[in-house]
Length: 393
Image 1 (cartoon, rainbow, N blue to C red):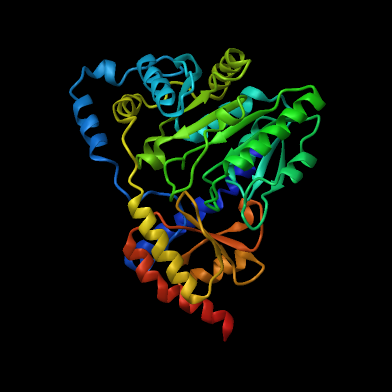
Image 2 (tube, rainbow, N blue to C red; image 1 turned 180 degrees about the vertical axis):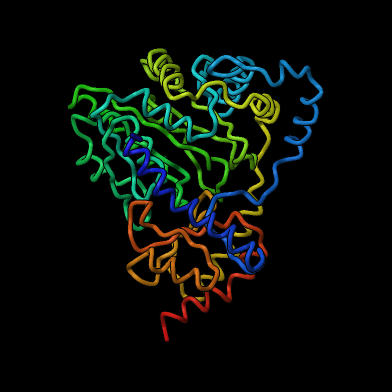
């Protein structure tokens, strides 16, 4: 007999990946140039030349060392490089013992949730949210509590959070820059949030952890992205190089247990145990070594900024309503009917692949991923126009 929960997850896959798979089939059927695939966050910007050079140089090293196991938490030299980077950039006294290398931010999030919760605890997420949060929270035996963001700016709603944080709350997941909206939490907003957590810790007599999901930290358009551990010390940062270095398929990132928290060593030990329990040990070794060499390599945001301008201008001229993104590479567009799934299905008739908002925890919107080539956006405008006209006829 199979596990019923796991069977359910397998039978009902991610809406994002399901639409992406549909797009691959359509491209094979009618040609990639005729499909406008805005489904998944696959960066179109190539990895920096420094990444290619690092790979080529590393391939000349002794194979058994290059491709062999590292300690569970990662190569000590790479953990040191990450800690040094955090110290330089954020003026935080990061130590390598607090760094755990992971297979992307996904593994970091799953580990972090399991490390700071017990079955029966509650974990708060901010809606709209990345859908897989609910999967990882459920796998840890915890209850997911959804708190809507403040509308229309999609900042943290401090009053709503105050109502949601209770005796069973163990952690709150933040994601800034945000997927799917592109909002960036301001310093003022985060400071108000931290003040709330301090009051709640005293009131409830328990520690409240923040898990900061930061794969889009480098993809911004002028907005400041405060470093969360500097605002709330009891923070675990989950970082990925999938977006910053355009390496989503290589599955490499890290989690950092802030040295500023008073129980940092205890949490790091729990992280090591959670990594062991979940099987997330020894992240891909070749790319551990690559990121150590490329850790200060800047991200190429110019192409995303140009796409953002092109898409928002085009959709604005057509009369679509959307949230102006401050970061990441997604546009949150109001569906032309209340049923986001029906709108997404209707868009398919025009070969537009838009992710419905239902799986993000809200209705009535779609996510448009603009980390595509400029040509895809340009060619898609007649399709967006025809889609809108189909509601006006």
